[in-house]
Structure formats: C-alpha cells, structure tokens
Amino acid sequence: MLEYIYQTTGLLLLAFSLQTFLDKDNPKRVGTGLFWLIYGVTFIFGAMIPNWVTGLMVLALTALAAGGFMGVGNYKTTNEDERQKTASVLKNKLFIPAAIVPVGTVAISQFTSLGALVGLGIASVASIIVALVMTKSQPIHSLNEGRRLIDSIGWAAILSQFLAALGYLFNQAGVGDTVAQIVKMMIPENMLLVNVIAYSAGMMIFTVVMGNAFAAFAVITTGIGIPLLVLENGGNAAIIGVLGMLSGYCGTLMTPMAANFNIVPAALLELKNKHHVILMQVIPGLIILAFNIFVMYSFAF
Image 1 (tube, rainbow, N blue to C red):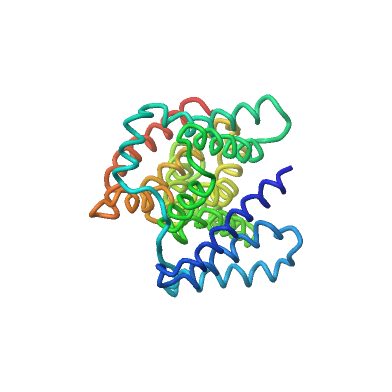
Image 2: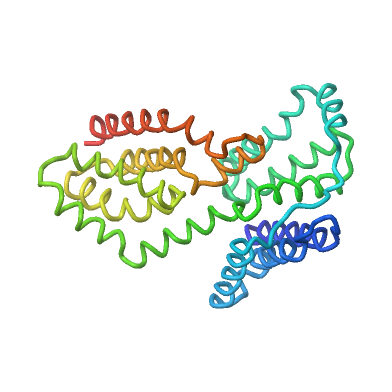
C-alpha cells in the first residue's frame, strides 16, 4: 500500500513537470521541469531502479539546484482579491481541510494496520477532496496551486530526505563510534549530568549542522545515548530517546539548514530578513533544551 502512495506522489510531480515544460512564462522552465521530472521518477520507480542510477539522479538534482536552473512561472491561480472574497465567505471553515490531514493520519495509524505514512497519504487525498467541494473549485486549480507552492519552496522541498540519508551514511561510516570515543576522552567517568548535557547538546548541535534531527539521532544516540546513558548508567531508553529527539528539534529551530521549517516560511511570508524566523526561535529553543536536560537527568535514571 505504501508503494502506491509513493507512486501517486510521483505522478503528481510528473504533472508539475509537464506543466512547467509548457509554461512559457518561466524563463527556467527546462531546468525546473527536469528537476521535478527526475524527482517524480524516483518516487514511481524507486523500488526498481538500481542504487547507482538513483545516485546519479540525486547528483543531477543537486546540479540543477546548485546551478540556478530553477525558477518560477505563471500558475493561473486566483488573484489576491478572489482569495480574499473566498476567505471572507468560508472564514474558519478554511481550516477544516488542514485539520483533516493530522487527524486522519493519527486515526488511520491508530485504528488500522496501514501505518502512519499510508494514513498521511489517504488523509491528504481526503483533504484535497474536501477543499475542492468547499471552495467549489476544479481539480486543475489544486494542481496549479500545488505547483505554485512547490516552486516557491524549490529545491528545499527535498532537503529533509537528503539530510536523513546523510545521517544514515554517517552512521554506516562509524561516525557514531567516533563521537563516543571523543566524548569518553573529554568527560571523566561517573559524571552523569555532564553525559546528559553532552547527549542533549550534541543532538542540538548536530541537528544545527545537518538540519535534520532524524539524521542527528542516528549518530548521537549511537555514539552517546546508548553506550553512555543507557548501558553504562542504566538509563530509561524510552525517556532518553524521546528527550534526545526533542533536543534535536531545538536545533531545528536554530538552523537555516532546516530550510523547510525556517527558510521556506520566511519566503512564503515575504519577510525582509530570511533568517527572521530563526532569530525569533533561538531563545525558546535554548529554554526547551535546558528543560530537556533537567527532565532527563531527574527522571531517566
């Protein structure tokens, strides 16, 4: 079932690609179209494509993004006055389609055997249908608006997948073991609090560098969390893991590498300072980190 969700996503990306190739108002339509075409193919045929071919496709995506071959065009969507008129009629009902996605995902994952990702796919389709019915729009409108949004985000739309893969590679390369050796050299034995700080702060810092807490979790938990906190000090693995991931999210609040969280919203909101979101989140992130350290030290051992 999950494979069908991936293939549906890939077909949507191919539709974006075709629209882009035909969009004469986009001066970079060839590069943008190729980017979404290649990305869509990885979703549709990913299970059948040899790994080395997928690697070449990833390099092609990187070249298109880094070379500045992506741009925006004409999306044939509603204008500002039309959107304001619709919003004034629907008011808070506009939040219904958005709420369907998380509620539907949780419900499907909890009460069926389909899993969270399949639930997310089904809930997203249901949300689109409800939105079309509520706004009395045509399916092509959702396609046009979807292309506008994904072009606004650009290459950052796939950053989380790149960084998650990078974390896996780091772990396979033994970075976690190296981190553990460095920490053991720097921290004297029987200093539990220092180990807790090293793990929590390490999750935050590594997330800042990589932009993805999932990638950091694989490395820092393997290097510090499991050997030093769980095995050596007998800590509760569930509490340590949850608070460790939350500490990683503190780093997500502070880094431009988490572009889909921090840079994309600034772009969509047309903020003058593209780092304004990060600046507003640094202090809350540090406060949450300190809270995580306190709770982990107090209740995990």
